[in-house]
Length: 632
Image 1 (tube, one colour):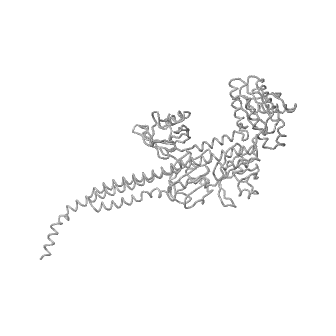
Image 2: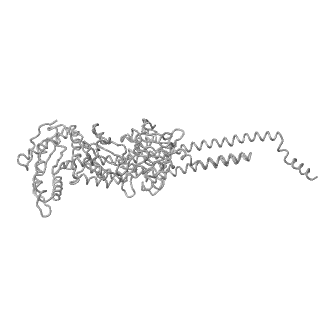
Image 3: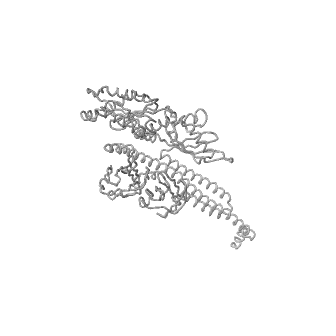
């Protein structure tokens, strides 16, 4: 009889839970709970997908900008080297190899230089592979042949080539060599391996299927790096790619790559002045990989909440937990971005615009030489104290334009004051990331880069381009520029410009008797002695082996120029003491005046040169102004 009693008790305890009304309410409750729970799950899945896309696009946009600036700086340095070495080749081919060696030592990149004549015959190369291919018709290559069909002077970037001997890929950067009449006499080229441009790839972390590419504007791939395929697609033409056909200078898109079939977020920047475009791509599945764990967890929470039937608090806890994890994922993405910047040597700053204070990363503190992690834009220690006075107004104007929404980004190169009183060149970039309801700026984030070394190298290259290496005097290029400026001022103010052209009589016997070392010292002594008899505003330039020119930017009459020429001749007639030797030389001088002899520097130089040869023809060691006939 005990068994029936047990069944009755069970029914009494749990029977109410199986009534039809309760079941209907339970069904309605379950329906509402499932809609709420799985609706929240679906919303969170969409939000995670959005966060993944936003994070991926932000990463590739920032990194493509950084990559484009690195490529621009590298190509600009290569182009500057080509221009300088071309001048060296035209002035003194015998000393060209020494100039190439000096450039290679300072550039610190795997670069080789080549010079051909107009027909493509190899005249010089510091590349052993090129020397093995001396019989190869280099003139048939597009990067060499292009200069025979096009006038002007521009940098041409060739297609990537694979050497038949070494098996290594290289990119040729070429410029034409033309004579004074504009006729093509040769081509100078710099060869760089594509891998040098892709060293940036090793410092980023965008997942295993990331891709970094450097293309020409016609779509030809000249450098591409992705972990699975390496150099497989070198030289492939991507002329139909969206960023090749786009008109702007930068942009973003999502596309399945026709090369490897990977769906990626791409960001691109065009370097139109060099005919190049850079792209950085992150695979969509790599961008979403960071949120896979959160997505799986959301589905599990949904299942648990559905089974518990009513533990609504769990849903709230799950939402809070999901929010925390999403913020953590965003913080991790920001940390990786900062890590990439730190690896590149850049410092990060985060500015509260309303308070005028900026929070500096450790790298930014080192770049600014700041003791404090927080600096003020206002007050006695603000921008006016930090920025060099020559650039302060430009910095303030550029910053104001961006804050007011006139420009999309803030970018400025300027000097900042160090604690020891010295100055350092930096490149500052930033953007307003948060604005108020009225559009007023609230927060601004950016980076600092230390470009002191780059500026010093640019200054050194500028001096090499405008200074004679032996005497440290201005060379022909700088003389031409100063003549042009002096003539412009003279045309405006109505005065004359004088030019004295002279060479050294009896210099060749000194060279032949005592050697080139003595001759070089004599040239330096001549430069020092002549400079002493000139005004501070006059320019003494070395324009040839033993030929010099003196520019007098302000003269009243011809006698002014002749008086200076007489002082130069007198100092040349005095003996030069080189150790135990007494060296005796003289000079043949010719002079010309603007506007008497012509309207430009070329005419002025031509007349002065003719006058110098007139002095030589009448016995040397004299001054001539006989060729004051107007030219031009």
